[in-house]
View 1 (cartoon, rainbow, N blue to C red):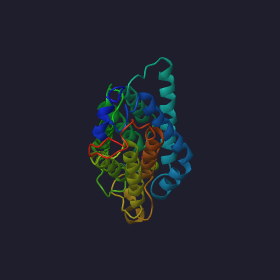
View 2 (view 1 turned 90 degrees about the vertical axis):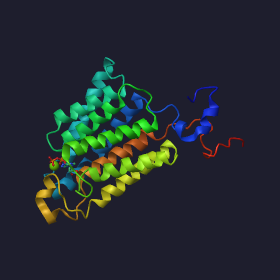
View 3 (view 1 turned 45 degrees about the horizontal axis):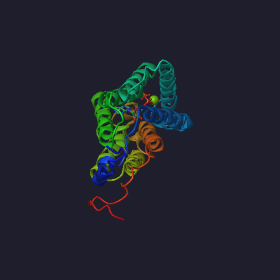
View 4 (view 1 turned 30 degrees about the vertical axis):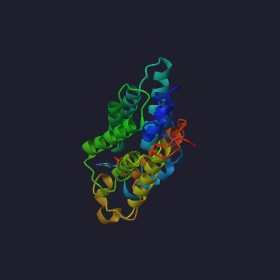
Length: 250
Ligand code: ADP
Ligand code: MG
């Protein structure tokens, strides 16, 4: 699909809107960009956690992602990471083993489920990516039992997954769909401020947890920002710019 001589297939629109899809190398870039953004924002994440937790979210995420990037680099030397599944399994296990806080097991599970859903197939198309992110969300829920409005990372991740799936179902191009997911994560993050925390450390504060942005929702919004940067700018295949009404001439 999408190779020379198959341009007529582009008239199918959404199916080919991402070109060949994202590779393990692209997905590695996503993880690196996430690590870079967390590094850049670690003081903010720690300040947010100081207000309603124990002031370690920035340090936790930074430690975990630094270790994950190091593990990827090390594995790359002997070419041990050849597939999306292997990449995210490595990342998830590294986070679980290096981060003691709630975020270690939660993000660890997110990446482990993501890798499990992606498996060895490459490149990864839009629908497969969205389904894998949904599997990651399901993992976070299985692990932490958070629901909408509990003031957790769920409140950024769930809207992002929903927005990505809706945009793809509506036939939007991959890049635009990813941007919608990122915007939904940002809006979800912002919406945590007035919420009363019902899960995690912040829930011990009761009413005093309101009026503060959730640290985990903030780091999750960075994960989606990183996806736009690393995965959203792939070239569109020839012929995908038109509508979905089947007209191709001029
Ligand atoms: P800890 O709370 O152990 O210090 P972190 O500070 O690294 O861990 O992470 C705190 C973040 O974890 C919170 O801001 C929240 O988004 C997220 N979190 C905590 N408990 C849960 C849960 N049960 N489900 C989903 N997310 C949670
Ligand atoms: Mg904390």
